Amino acid sequence: MSTTTTMLLALLLHCFCVTTAELPAGPGGGIGEGRPYFDDVSPRNVTAVVGQAAVLRCRAKQIGNRTVSWMRKRDLHILTSHIFTYTGDARFSVLHPEPSDDWDLKVDYVQPRDAGVYECQINTEPKINMAVYLSVEAAAATIWGSQDVYVKKGSTISLTCSVNVHSSPPSSASVLWYHGSTVIDFDSPRGGISLETEKTEGGTTSKLLVTKAALTDSGNYTCVPNNAHPASVSVHVLNGEHPAAMQTSNSAALTAPLSAIIIITAACR
Image (cartoon, rainbow, N blue to C red; front, side, top):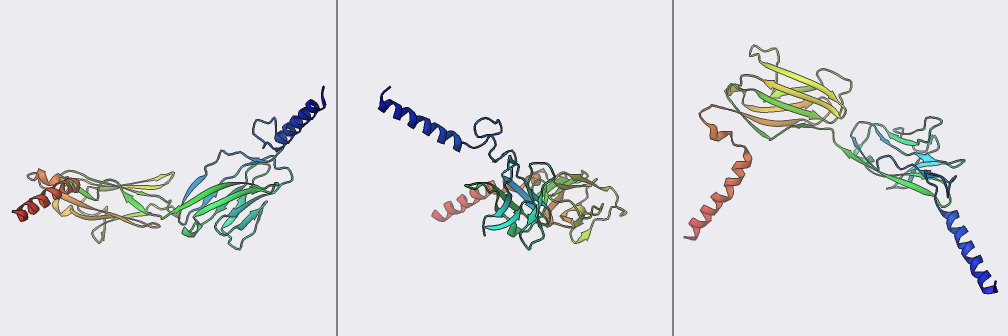
């Protein structure tokens, strides 16, 4: 074997050794086994509601004597290191049940200013990190369907309100309904009014039923949660002899351009 061939083989062997040494660890083991890595199975985007708790998940494998930390990207502030908190904001803490690989960041009573990127880091050389984005939305109610509800006289008014937070503390009166400026009284002499409230994984759903709708049941209906922004709709109870009025505001919007064309045409003449 010539000297040139020997040098080429030695160089190739050196390159192979350097390459394999720098390969990161993987869950399947093999090359790189023993090096820290993130078990990337958790969501990278987390949505939380103002006033509720948020958990940003991080699973770090094979860290050995390395340390897992959480950093807030916008100001490069180290929030936690190992199981210790390094911020004066007591809302931040790390969840690490022994002997798991989980190093989750918990944020209590989330505020709008908490939105942004957070990084879970392992102090390898060079340092490796995994980014998680926290988005924050307001606590609010939403009434399903159109902002204008049309029903025939004698039929049932059915309104469903979803609230994206749980009531705290839980209560049967966690959601109130108003007709105009008056709280709806389910025990009123009118009768025929009922409410179904259901706790869901994402919050609360409240369904208002008003049977045998009368013209006096028309007006503004508002769903008012005890810990979120309210939502309103306008209910129009119509006599049976006016079926054309049952059309929604969408059809009205379609006729508006035609009216404008007629006016423009007349002006041109």
